[in-house]
Each structure stands twice: as structure tokens, then as C-alpha cells.
Picture 1 (cartoon, rainbow, N blue to C red):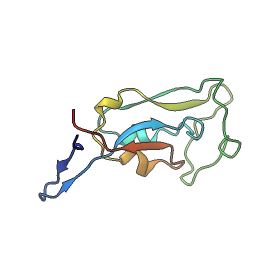
Picture 2 (spheres, one colour):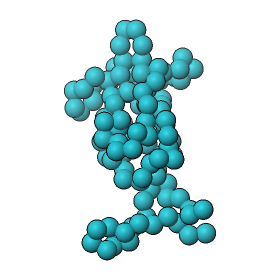
Picture 3 (cartoon, rainbow, N blue to C red):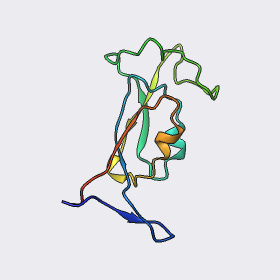
Length: 109
């Protein structure tokens, strides 16, 4: 099968890479990906108790000084709400301070 491709405004062909997963063990719940996503692909949810945090990430102050998703009451983490609505722009991966995203090109169906 052939991969999904698109055309830029300038007429160049490219292959978008769509979000397929979020590493919730490293996600700090900062919400940057949620804010930049033009298609409502993500949702901030409570971190499941079964998700063990990487020791280096808990309470870690990122480069931007934002809220890191951890509080005394509830830890939040990003999840995929509607991954089929992803347009493959990659904004989420570029803004993520913890590099939590996996993207892949997809085959046409």
C-alpha cells in the first residue's frame, strides 16, 4: 500500500506523521500539546496509580518553568482522546519538553 501524502501550499509533496502514542511515564501533564493541537486530539486525565513515574521526571522543573502537572492532590497526564483526528502536523512533539510522543506515517486505506 501507499503512504498518506499531502501537498504544501507551494506544491511540494510530504508525508505527514500522525501521533500514535504518548509515553505517560515521562509526561508531566504540562498541557502544552493540548494547547497547540488544532484538532482536539488530547485530553488531560488523572495519572493512574499503576503508572510508575521515572524518578527523574517527578516534580522536575522543565525548561519553561510551567506547572509540571503534579500537585499534592492529583497528578495529571496527557492521553489520546481522538487520535484518528490527528492531521500529522507534529506541533505536539515540537512543544513537548519531555519528548513523550511517538509519530508514524500511515498507509492509505
